[in-house]
Length: 114
Length: 113
Image (cartoon, rainbow over all chains, first blue to last red; front, side, top):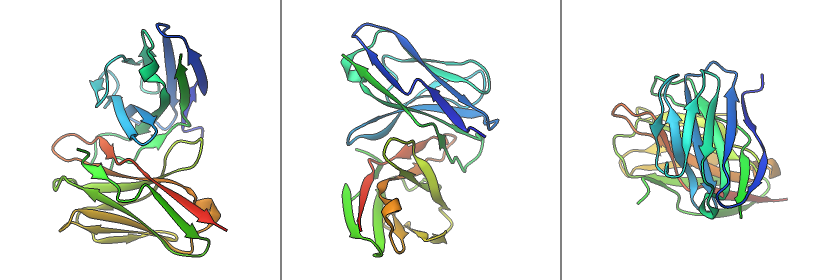
């Protein structure tokens, strides 16, 4: 059981380049999330998908887009990368729909924008 | 400001000691609280949770205490081991139709052998 799988693990971009971070979960979870983690800032929610077919903005959505491709996959796209988007990105999933929203996280993508 | 925060960014303990990590929350409507452990280079991992109708919950070597009067949460780790060295996050679930956990900044626990 792989859980939540993120690719790539590391990426270096130049300012203005675009890229898509991939995330897939094999736990049949309804909800999926993208967080970014910066030193001293904890985890901040970028976008989430409460269920297949829906997406919503989180705390820091500017500069990002997401796609809930199907129940398993939730991708995060940076259309024009900026140095401020240098961060570690985590995808997570949860069963969804209930009060007890325990999140299961992937291992993260370390992104550097030069 | 943050609705979930931690009193100490870094906690250093000796192996075998008990550790206490604290967390404050500001939203009295929060119903559910979770502690996560994040080891270096990995994603956060669930440790233990507690609902707002409980004051205490015990797991294996870990105990979470909830004081709703002062909106305070703590994680106690008994007989701390080097493998417990990590960053610990508390997260609260805000009720009212939205079940998106909100995370604090984290406390780094360093265990000295």
